[in-house]
Image 1 (cartoon, rainbow, N blue to C red):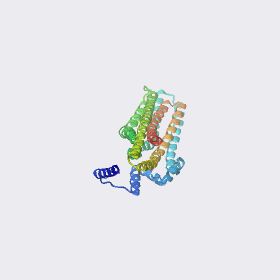
Image 2 (image 1 turned 90 degrees about the vertical axis):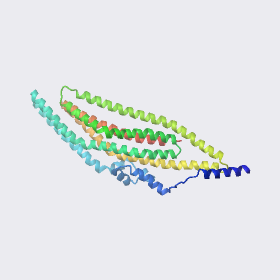
Image 3 (image 1 turned 120 degrees about the vertical axis):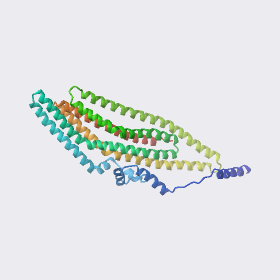
Image 4 (image 1 turned 180 degrees about the vertical axis):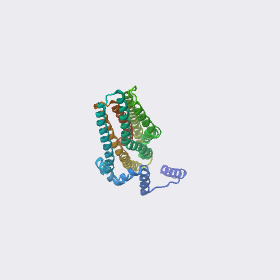
Length: 369
């Protein structure tokens, strides 16, 4: 009896000694704050799309009703306009190639043939750049918006992961994924436009010089960009997977240790407090899943129109390059192949950004502490 009284007095004394002012946030205020922070991280077009699909963090029904078919239906009008522009560019380029092939067969003189080839390259450059500029701007804008959203989303999601008991996993996610997201943002903002612009300028210049093997240059750039992005993707996935496995093991031991200490050291109500702690972690886990779904859907909405437009343009340029080679317009074929590789480079960057967001978030949700 004396030990029980001394224990109660000790608990009361420690409570007064280590007490501090605590601000309790109501559920509605917490929901508004959490939803508002992530909602403000997306651009206006994405916010309108999320509102159209009635998707927010605390509305699971809207998340479950979302599908790629409904997303395609929502962007149908916008994509129709952009795809018509690409089709118009494709038909104009096809007409130019067919007419140019007929004229090149008529012109026999070497000097006239060289002048005609340069004129054809200039016309091809004008038509191609006018058809590609909107897609290039869309892809670069998508990369910037996606990286900005990831930089805002990752700390919020990592904090929820930490609250759910996975402190080490949250630290790993916040450092690794945020580092890659900031790296993409800095690269696109500072070097993306310069690299793609310089590459296109070199392709145009080399296409007018017979002494330079344009195909080798384009092939080298294509291989280098593909290998570099593939290497970064492999390193990212491997690093995140290994660190997450170790972090989840540590967090699991920590949570079990806390539950054991609480149930053992606190008499009478220790087991009840331990079960309440487990229920609290489970409730936070539900919120964590909703936030993860919101982030994945948001990045899909941000990237979907740009990726569709980029893939269609890539296919159009590939067909035009094949057609030029078939019509024996080799310099034009190399030029169009260079433009095709430039669009491919931007598409790889966009896919890598989406890969980082979706894979990292899905891995963190799949691992259980």
